[in-house]
Amino acid sequence: MFKILRNFFDFCTPQDRKRFYISIVLSLFQAMFEALKIPAIAIMVQALLDGKVTSKTCLACLGIMLVSIIGAGAFKAKATMLQTEGGYNTCAQKRMKLAEHLRYLPMGYYNENSLGKIMSVTTNTMQNLENVATRVVMIVSSGLLATAVITLMILFFDWRIGLILLVGLAVFFVINTGLMKASAGMAKQKQVKDSALVAKVIEYIQGISEVRAFKLTGQRSRDLNKAIDENEHANSAMELKLIPFMSLQSFWLKALGTGILLASVLMHLAGSMDLFTCIIMIISSYLIYAQLDNAGTYSALLRSVDVCVTQANEILATPQMDISGEDIIPESCELRADNITFAYEHRNIINGISLTIPQKTTTAIVGPSGGGKTTLTSLLSRFWDVDSGTVTLGGTDVRRYSMDSLMKNFSFVFQRVYLFEDTIANNIRFGQPQASMDKVIEAAKKACCHDFIMQLPDGYDTVIGEGGASLSGGEKQRISIARAIMKDAPIIVLDEATANVDPENEADLIGAIDALTKEKTIIMIAHRLKTVRKADNILVIESGKIAQQGTHEQLMAQEGIYRTFVDSRREAASWRL
Image 1: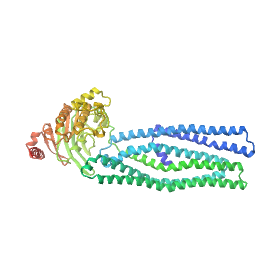
Image 2 (image 1 turned 90 degrees about the vertical axis):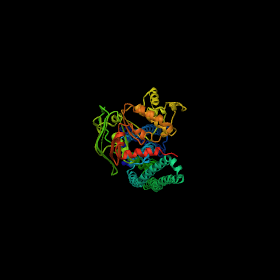
Image 3 (image 1 turned 60 degrees about the vertical axis):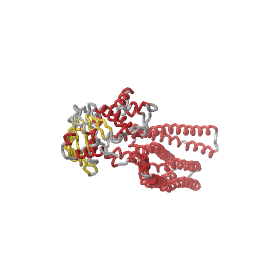
């Protein structure tokens, strides 16, 4: 229990850790004021036994009770406020820290870990900490402190009853340790099932068109229902496994209170305890039960808190790419690769490629699927780090750049565009949040998307669905290009940017790309002949190596993959029905 509390406090930000520590001190004062009820009761009991109950006695008892209630309430309110602020602020800061950390993780991390797991940690896990951790830490810590104060007061009144109480508390903590151990494995299993459920829900929603197209609605629903059932079973199993320990814990506390009551009565009857002390001990036995029962019950949730902290720390402990470089402005935008290699999961993807991409030239990358085209562009822009060899920008190794200063030199237009659930204007100014509306409109006009935007209900203030679901593929591509135009980076990477565009939008899209790529260094992955043949240099990638390179005319003059590629495209284009 104490180890888990310590781990949680270590997880908190320094400022919020301080809030929690102050709140614990305040909880101690709260417990001391709560314990003032015992002296108040003692004064009245003594007066009753002596037959000297006066208005002065009643006022003294009432005064102490009021001080106890008001003082305990004030300290509890302040402690609760500090703990609530600490819990919510810690989770907010950790969410931002997780997002910033994920930003610089190697792309392989996202291949090895499901989107459901990552989303579960950043959403469910942090929400559990927000909603559960603050309350649990508050109730458990204040319950333990109140019990400690009352135990000291009982020892002051009668050491024998105090000794019985200490033995009883020792047994209680043994039972509680069993409870914590029982919840350890179950809490971990619960988090695994939570992540699996999130993953299945995401998979089902993202793949709903394929599910319908292939008439797999029933099968996919069964998979989703299975994940829901397993999640329900994990939660139910956890509760059922903990109920015996929680019941035993509660029973033992009641038995302990009853034992203190009987021991006090027996000692009084034996003449070794006066009636005044006997009555005070009987009343105190109920106070002990009330304070510790809540702490014991909620302590079962501490293990869930610990699992949440562990999962967040696992992501934060994942080594980032080395981003601690220098803020460098390259003298030129020439890209060079020198004998680079890269392997993923023991499979060689890039095998000793060397190339030079001069500034303000267009380089097209073609080749069979799976040959390493996209991986090569990822290495050139340092989405991945090479295993050996070097990639340089302007003569400087890309690993010497800080990640942010390196990314200032690149803009990307991918085959699959992702737009955020926000206004069209904010999606365009994504890389420059403070950009004026005039600049947004100027970029949109260059990207050939101003006209269709103005036809939308709210124009540039139209909120588009998540992922740009309310727009066509060509419209999303043009907004993506407008975003890249806004960034105005000197190097443009186009990854199959026109692959899935319908003929009606193709002319507009090509015009948008022309506006984007004017006076830039262009790296394009393409399969369409007319987007390739104008390139200054064409790289033919096969099995992670450069099989051929040269201009369109040079490659057509020699036997090889490229000429076969062009001939097959021409043959396909000549087919008629």
